[in-house]
Length: 224
Image 1 (spheres, rainbow, N blue to C red):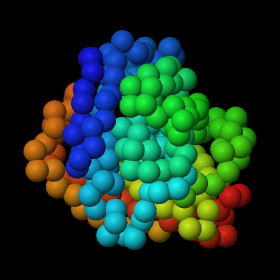
Image 2 (cartoon, rainbow, N blue to C red):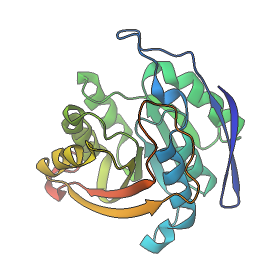
Image 3 (cartoon, one colour):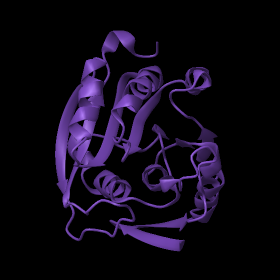
Image 4 (cartoon, one colour):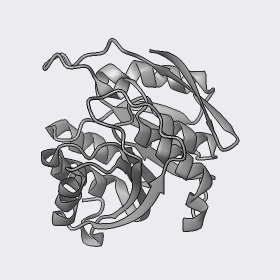
């Protein structure tokens, strides 16, 4: 797909997108190879609106789950985060490393494999410790994946951690959020509207309705 440059507020982010990565098991294209609208929405919201929630990126530790091309996580580093971890499945890691290098962030951003739902994911999450901020974009697809994802969130979040998840509002979004609530999470919503909808490469019609969801795990289960 080539190289794209995103102008977000007064910050420029360079992203290399790929179109030749496939799941070795299913044969399906890995959709994390390119930037989805929700990733752009989250990055823009972080740059322009997160101060309304009294959050300062300086000296914070940040992790992005299901990072794909890594736009929100890279934006966190460019906004001043001290340490950022971008995580996804193994085939996407070289692309993430390339994007870290393209933005000159090797000193503050690392790339790690993390796939929730696998036995080894729990031990890896425990190795990470807790983060000040956890980022997710367009992960609300399959409701069956939400319970394993919720477990990872409980491990890597501390008492004062923030969890921000951006999503385009689709028919199955509520079902996914319900699974988080079944796991004891509190969910609050900040609605976002794109001024100019970006082209999205998938089989779904582009909607102009996006939200940032603020997730809060039950206190007694954090870092379990």
